[in-house]
Image (tube, rainbow, N blue to C red):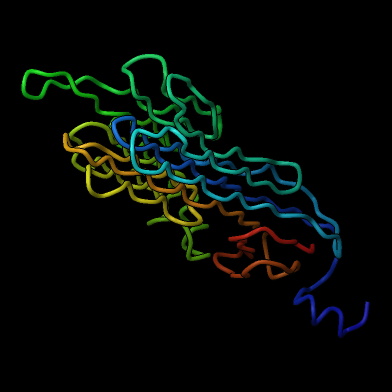
Length: 278
């Protein structure tokens, strides 16, 4: 190989070497109005160590976040999209569909107190929280559930993400305070800002303010909208996009993404889909 090609690759090319990858899918959007369930976080998982071949190109797919539902009692929030690298796929978070439970990397919150919260995929995330009945002025109102996160199931707040990859987050200036994959906070009737889960989950809204979006490149779920007893019903926040980070021991060998070195490892951070050249 010519010295010019090696310089362009930015790599010390030798024999095959082992890499692992943190693969975070896109979070789901939050639902709206009185059915303002929080969006589930995108699935988060670390791939098994795999040997890559120098000068071979590997496709990296970074999933987008799902759309938040429009204002009103709409249930048309969008699920997150999958992220993948070298045969390992993390599944996008699931979004609330009226009276149905959908599965995703982590599950969406529910409207009812039984039966319609979304389920998470084992190893990638957790279930969304159920809705609950609350009595206000002698009437039953609904607090919707928060979306599940990588580290915990949802309640009315979003489930927490995981900081198991905090060293990766620090090295690549990514994540949310060292966490990835927080669920969106649950909205509903007369709700006042249920928090999103640590790891980029968006907070719920109220009748005049929509749910917050999940943080970009964390896989955080969007916060649900709400209704304040008046005419307005706010929309849900969009889910946060995913991220893929490839890591290997030693100095830089491959190219692609944003490259950083820390603690004896080289990291390649992809915040959008691209190609890793080993």
